[in-house]
Length: 449
Figure 1 (cartoon, one colour):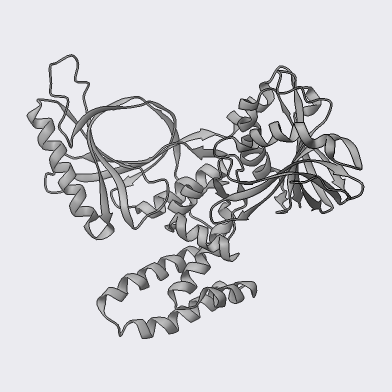
Figure 2 (cartoon, rainbow, N blue to C red; figure 1 turned 120 degrees about the vertical axis):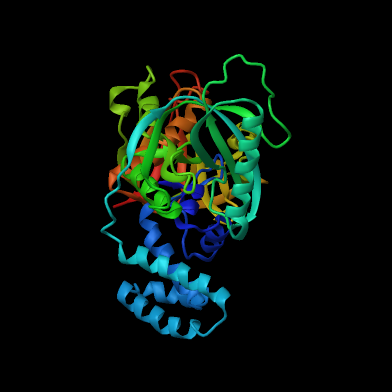
């Protein structure tokens, strides 16, 4: 799965737009992390997004797009609709040409579905690098090249004035975690030979001397400058990362090798670099707990009938550990619930109720056989019959992130299952020992084949 920022970069669509499409039910995230509110998308959702964007640029309303997509609009029909619309657009003013280019790009991606080109991506380690750099917020793409050239000049003048030795390697770092058309956070850097202990100026208000950290796993795509394009490089790198079970962990880097023998064309060779981390690391963290039993390495599967939970409700994004506070209160009042049918507590998660902001509902409660005399301040929730994959969390609360990363980033993409969208829950029975090293509770994830 891809983080919403990575999916945004891959598709050249802002996070705000993705949130809006989710709120309309056009394109919903496959999973929302209840602890951070962060959304995750799957690469297989890109064809649907391409169709949404192409149809939108062709002038269809979002309601019309929903109807067209429900009828599984094929690429050849979309191409015919585009050709008809293109004849009209050609008579408009020049600023409409940008719209046609966007549509053409979306169509090209749609037509390549299922047979993407070979991904010439290599994985290597990159040592720490000393750079002189400047960072700025570029207002929009119209002035992007002009602003980057200004930043290069600033850096180059400072390096020459500081008697530093450049390594003939320029670097662009794209710090926005998602695609943006405005306010792009860009850093322009010149790689330096190690400055040593010379007494040099540390920088100015705009230019500074920095050390970029070493990256153990850097996914790289190299070629002549401008080929492939930045957007295609993103597509290839992210496709490779998802196919090989990696996730991004830092800003995309664009390295350009300077050719001193051709001063008229200084930027001749480019390498796109994306820092990544193997999803298998989360699996190793999940398995490595010495208190984990061998039969707990993989999930168990069960079909449960519908049941009812009564408990205290929290609604939000759990930004300040509100769920922990909810349980502190619930533990003092759950004995007020009548007709309890199981000696176990439930952490029932429903949502996100609001996919735009990522807020969800969480119930700390108990399963009941009959609803009557509901305690004041508590709510009743019905859970439908579902099939579940059951995972065991062993140990402390601060390791829970590793368990959820294993479930959603490692196990689920390889399992052949999909999420149903129904409520999931945590079950706390006699194995739970308040997050002691050998404490256990069970995470029920609703799935379908």
